[in-house]
Image (tube, rainbow, N blue to C red; front, side, top):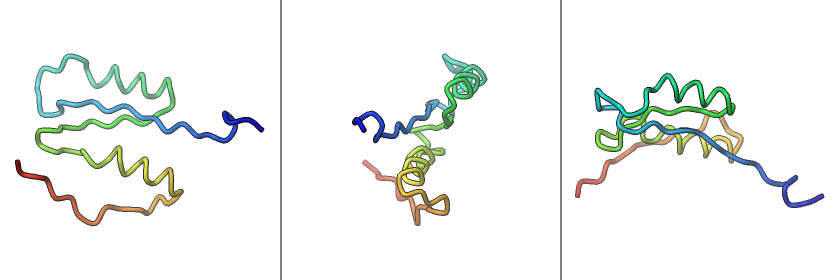
Length: 79
């Protein structure tokens, strides 16, 4: 078997700026794209930290094959 057979591609789309009213790209078009490529879509905001952990948690769940995996606590850093 070759290297390509032994790899798994983890992919998802993150839509940043959830907290902005007028977004450059409408979420509906990105949701359509995620369905087309059969990957997850996460609406996030780095500013407010809304859903910021979701894509990382999804990756960890796929890697560990444990859908019950959760984060205990998210502590935002204050700079």
